Length: 186
Image (cartoon, rainbow, N blue to C red; front, side, top):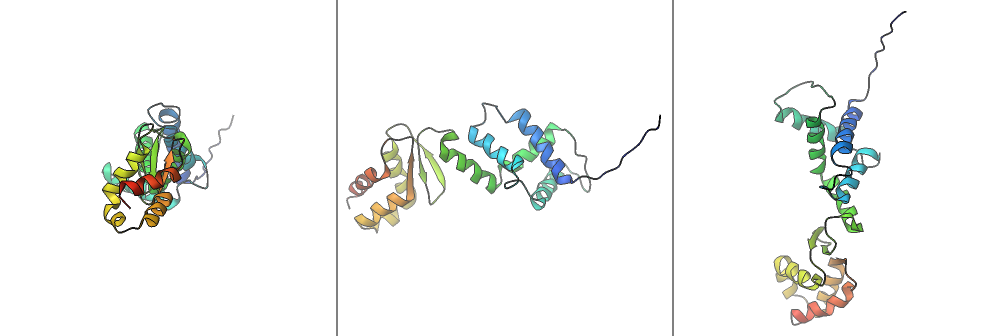
C-alpha cells in the first residue's frame, strides 16, 4: 500500500479566526457569565463575513500576541485555549466589536433591562424602573450642564428629544421633555 503525503497551504488568517471560533464556542457561547449581546457580537465578528476581521486587523493582533509572549517571526497556531482567549480578548477591545455589542444591547439583549441611552456619547446609563427621568437629569448635570444653561426651553426640549432614548419604560421621551425643562426652570 502506497502512502501519499499532500501539501497544501491555507490562509493563516482563516486559521486564526477558526482558533477564536473554537474558544468562543467552548467558553463564551451559552455561558451565562456573558450577556447575549456579547455572544451575538462575537458571533457576528467570527462567523459573518460582513463583520469578520480583515488581514490587517489579524496582523495587528498577532503582533501584540508576539510582543506579550516575547516571540518574533513565526509562531505555532494550534488549538490552544490561551491563544484563543487572547485573540477573543483583543477582538472584544476593538471599536467594531463594541459597536456590534451596543447594537444588540439596544435591542434588549444586554445586561440591563432599564436604561437611558445617550445618543451623543453612544453610552448606556442603567437605571431602575421609574428612574429614567432622574437618570436623564444626572447625565445632563454631569456632561451637558453648561450647554443646557444657555438653551431656551424649546432648545432644551429638542435636545432631550434627540439626545436620549429610553429603554424598558412605558413612557416616551416626549413626556420627559417638559419635566426636564421644568427642572432647569426654563
